[in-house]
Length: 545
Image (cartoon, rainbow, N blue to C red):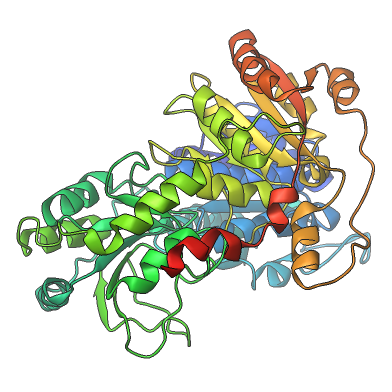
């Protein structure tokens, strides 16, 4: 058996469904082996986009997505998306090619030390130096990528190793990982601290989204009466429509939900880690914090929890709930006024008729159109904060945003992966004009795959979030404006269907028609970002009383 055949067999053994990316001549034996495989190869128009798709697959399934690139420039094009997966805890296996390592006839042409280049970005980086290593390296890569905390693993397959013969074609079977449970001492200590709290809040982070622990968390909230908020990447782990929800930590320490956070005397932190922008900052011992996660806390000057419950989150929450009394925290009078004012302020512009549209109205309209299980994939930009704050999720992983690397260019590839994996669900990419143009060529990929996908572009002819920061620092507007192509004609040139919104009343019917019609649709939406510069202090004057 050829080594590349063994590699593909090992990937099939891991249950790999798709490989995303762009091959080069150093991958040709591997590509030939894929030709006869059950694995579907998804050719993309940029390596970065392929890796974003693989990361999204890992994020939604918990199983490592796989991407492929050649040596040199192919591998370096993966870097941003690898960092995206690593910081965002999305399991992914990255395969790159390399020139022959046993005899080289091209000197240093295109040769970089990719294994060492990847090391700071991934959990593990290895080169296959002889064929019989393949089963162990592949099994180890998937194991490391998928175990907590998930992330990216890199394997380099040189072209001469890929074509060599191997005698043994045995691969290693996947084994169930038995997760560690927290000690009774830790559970009892956490329960004791919770019982003493007068104003407790539960924080739901991205780790809770990964493991689908909605049922035990929901039971915990129902029994105890404790209210909850979430980080941006924890959004959807619990429904935003329930009466226990107080909001998403989204804008700044002066935003609505943070007024409640400041008043809490205990934060029960479930599944959050400090790679995400801090939803609260610890100051002395004014506020008790319980850390509940698969791994111990990473102590920083802004985060040093007094109690840690380390182990399987679902098990920890179930046992903790059993240790607590019914409805001991049902008196929420300390936060009710804040909750009501927050709700009124957030929804005050849902029906605004001005045009170009305000982001608050756009989010409200999108929420009306998208099914409970429809998936909205956000790129990075100012609109992301409005969606994080205003969009109420009803099922896990139905609002995909990146609050770790916070990179532009991921929205469209992520939506393509969603449409490919779940063709029965609505898939909407929400992009700024800047982020969309970074990987807009993937429209061709979506059309070639016959996907049903809608792309909504917030068009303000500039980098709106950076402008917001620029104004916030008292600086003059400089260096952040650009011109866009005609997005309707641009979409048409790929074979997609382009739309331009001309009034606030057009967005909902345009979205509804696009999803009903099927195919790839691109919607050009002029946006009014003047609300960005409206100081939050004005909104928060109501809390001074």
